[in-house]
Length: 259
Length: 259
Image 1 (tube, rainbow over the protein chains, first blue to last red):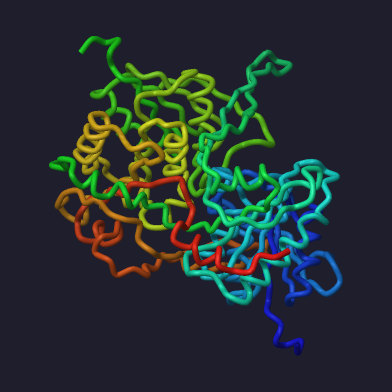
Image 2 (image 1 turned 120 degrees about the vertical axis):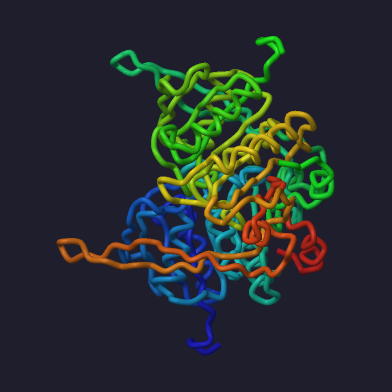
């Protein structure tokens, strides 16, 4: 393939540009095209679809890896996508990949996840977009396990594209859970963080609070991302940004809406 | 109605506890039940579904209005919901209302909006939840116009409830657009922020960047929130947190997923 024919691939994440996961992802992308990294300069986990509108943003070109241009950005993952598209590239890349996230983004975590919000922003921009997450928070997590999944899903998306308005949420169990049994296409499981608030006192005697959550599944379905990853599969959920509860429209229309 | 039988209503927003919109909303809620306000201590617009996991949170009881308990919180709108449910109430309110947002949350703004993310978090907690937005950013915006819509939608939700997994996104045109023609139940319009990045130089000669966006509609449908609000109606969109693109599942299953 001629160098100039190689697709441009935008790589971002929410763990920050110095995280191990984004290095693995950028390495894998080099086989598919020219790589541009634009990622937060510090961890931005759980930032959801936040954007920066009350402050300015800085970009800094950084050394990242041979053959790839890279910028760190002071903003959120979604800010990174916007700056890449509208300022650095001034156009749309052929593909956007986000991750590899250090930790799971299955089920309703898609809402909180900066990794997935970057992919959703890509979908809004009509860029084929994929978020990858390894279900392991530990600092020594091995990402080797994730490579075959990344190659397979990326090759499919580059070859076939994605329907407008849709991106992919890919979650990969850890190496400790044994060899991967394959890839399963799933729906987002119903579940919830059962939160706890841990209250402490500062040296002056004033309360402060830490959020702590325990994820609990509320969905016995075998077609979900929770089921798949618990049974040794990597899960792939197609995600859309149309949040309309279409099935509710008729019911709510039947109410009395007189003012 | 006996005082002890009055439903508990949690009021939050993303413009901060000192915004005019949340005062109007809390006033209206007093007619329906006992009011608890837990809202950010500063503007948190465009924070999406962000939560605070790398820092602690503070709560402060503040004077708000007679007959209503109120706390300001150092976190995001979604943090406010979590602290209210798991620390202050230690249970679920009968209703959660968020807003009145100073500015529109139609179309894909539902993704960026802290106001709507608080309502979506309420839905995750199985609390009937409504986000209200007035389509006027100006500081002198009159919220009087919004009151009949708030009363009508709130009365309906308290009487009929909402399907599990679903909340409402209510947008109200400004007074300047003329008298309201009524309420329309809609789907989320397809649209996008066509962003521009404005680059400036600081006194030391280094670049910094501001995000600027212009919303552009890509959806001619007359069943959308954009159409409704452009034609003098308040729009009500049922919103769900299942982001699965169910229609894509079959297509993506047909790909070759060998590792």
